[in-house]
Length: 249
Image 1: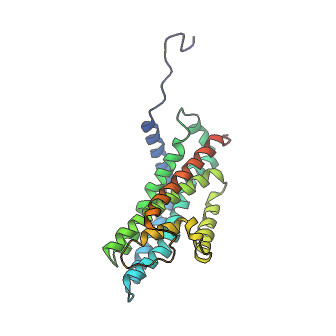
Image 2: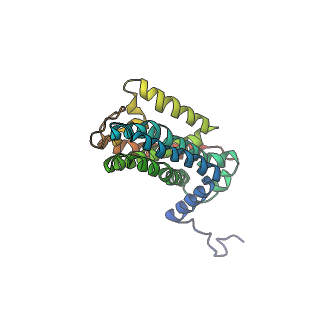
């Protein structure tokens, strides 16, 4: 006898916050591994050492700001986002486990959203906080600017590399190439390219600290506060579009 004929209703799909929270917790657990925590933790600890050494310069605030921009915003934050972001959904694809989530009665936009939130939840404290500590060697003003810049960069990079994990196989290698070539070499050498980079806009936020000159300055910090979250949202839309059309096996 059918469920309709017997008067028994099929179970209703979970509410938006319930299902989104469940996916978020699941992805957070799968992303946290000892090797990832040790690897990113070591790189983050190095940022504090670099900040301490830079503070010995004759102009400690500028020297520490340069170290935050060159090591923290251009390398540490994106590398952490690559490692966590590409694996958030990418590991489920590679391990043929995505089908079990695909069959759940939840909107398709929720998995990419949960993946970005879970990635940012890990990347921000593991990178932005140590960079803020390193900036404190110079000044409190620089520390606040560093916290804002690194956190916004972490959000944008998290969205980008979660989307990359859905669009590309072996996305971690594509992500590393993007970070090293586009966010570093091209951003530094090609005039005007900084406005198309995350590190460029994050550097604009770092420039909020009084007396700090940043090498990459694509626009005002006010614009950066809009551009960096917009990048994360655009990446979420691209990831959702891909997730709805991906072949699940």
